[in-house]
Image 1 (cartoon, rainbow, N blue to C red):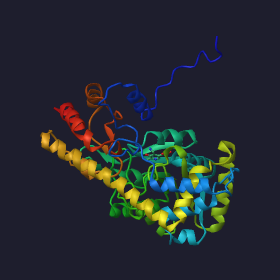
Image 2 (cartoon, rainbow, N blue to C red):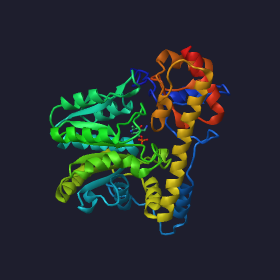
Image 3 (cartoon, rainbow, N blue to C red):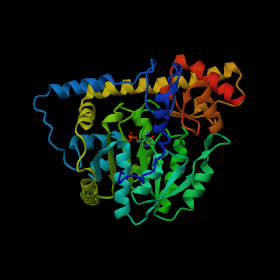
Image 4 (cartoon, rainbow, N blue to C red):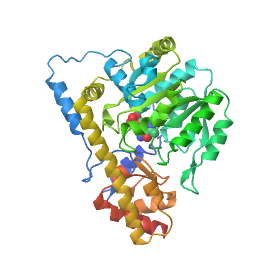
Length: 401
Ligand code: PMP
């Protein structure tokens, strides 16, 4: 008998498990709106042109070797990533008080940041939005932080519960960590306005709450890298401290390359250098050092003016296609006279629409229409295309009538 005989079967991941179920479905009309991965109008995964170009350049570079990276990753990549999120003219970067380490995409960056905080920060409590990306509480808890929720989404208005958010952060213990989605909140697609961000900042600074930004969608929300980074830059502008976890999964389509960055914006260059030294002690026993290929692609693109420009155009095209899917789905429901107000589909931002469909309705749509999504009614607009809009609209119409 196996020494592992007492291992019980674990449930599928609530998000990635949707794809597992989708793959098993033989129906030709099936549609996967579960995982947040970009698809073209033809329903195919997309490798950006500029990424293929960068890879070709890397392959052709005779001087290239496969040595280990330092524990902190590719130095160019780290500098360029900090510039991308904080802005090229960021005083924090000019003052040398940003410590950036290359990590395994957004998830790895969150994990390393959380492990550091659990070891070196005086407050172990982290407030995360309700709801949030399903992996957040797991990553943060396993790193040793204690997770609490702040109100974020109001199902009645399908918008931000700003009052609830301010109340909950207002009653958080001084110094607590607060996880903030930099833009394109997952799963709700609801972001604060810049005025609201400013109020959140004032409240957090007055209470000494530590901002930990999760930036998984820079450029994907509005189509502009700078516009999507505004909330983060607002917090950095006042000279205060914060953390930021960046992912290149969505905005460069580098999902499987696992390329991301974790930055600490510190008060002084001296603190930043000590933080970096301790980050190395977190990373070394976890995975020793990060992978080379993805970071080389990103650095190649970010440091070349033309390639950077080409990237922004391809990124904008992805963002625009998603925005157009919102409009098409909204129009299709209007034309069917589907009961209810569906304007949130065009108001929400980023990759997902939080439809308001309940678990029962989701189960119905999967069973009868072979449409796959997470049970909270979140659909990935990036997985939708014009040809499939009528099918989805029919399914939603029947589910709610
Ligand atoms: N944060 C949020 C809010 C996300 O939606 C995601 C991806 N679904 C991530 C982080 C991390 O993604 P990755 O590790 O693939 O970069």
